[in-house]
Length: 330
Image (cartoon, rainbow, N blue to C red):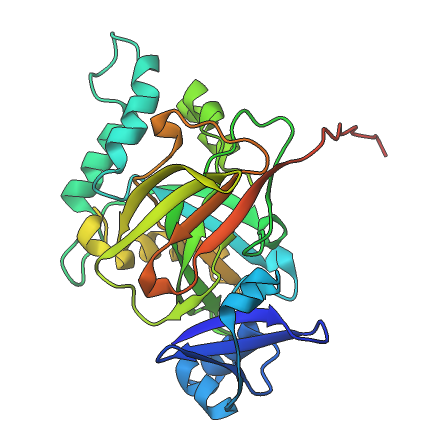
């Protein structure tokens, strides 16, 4: 089952469910957040709650996308209670891209391996622990909250001070925190973990700055487990034509960590187990147009697709105007 959120003909939020290639309205469902909360409270699966609500009129997902009526597949009534975070160097091809970005800044007197390559090797050796054991922790970063999420089909704005506006095609895990602090996984969605790779390349310690950017995920939430092999395509369109295109791989067959290990090292912190919160956790990538020398321009369109996740995730690139900030003394 896949879930979407969209604006209905009256401009109100609605939920749709897709099974067997048919999409229908979920009767009486105002949001995926409310469905998740009810499922967690009643001890039911998300799918069971959707079926219980009932399925109504058929929907045309492609038409909703064309009309710009798709919303993120989950959000929070208070956007500050939706966390967007992620992990890096988790995929089998991810180290070569990152290592190339930073190795030129590594002084010869230091160890021959960059910090990126060291962390990647740690993941290879200990990222897939045996059942009941805890594996090595991954690189982790904070991206923002619900205020920094662009809906599918909407532009992803880059701040005026940014040096780069680059896509990162990833899989995002979506989680709801129950009343007792238990993280409940709703499922997975395509994600564009939008980053500033030029800032990151200046110095690895600028990684945190480079990640404080908007992102997008969806349009569909795939309920259930992540397929072991995810094989999709990431492309950039300029003036309607393909400027750059490359496959991206995910799923545990293509990763140096298990999903369970990455989840453990995120939710081990009490901060991330606060009842009612939503977490969107990006699991990393090995494919970047930046690594191929691509510099995006306003109006370029990112397109990330994978058949197992339904509709592609499309967002244009936008740049914000400079907005100087003055700190005032109270």
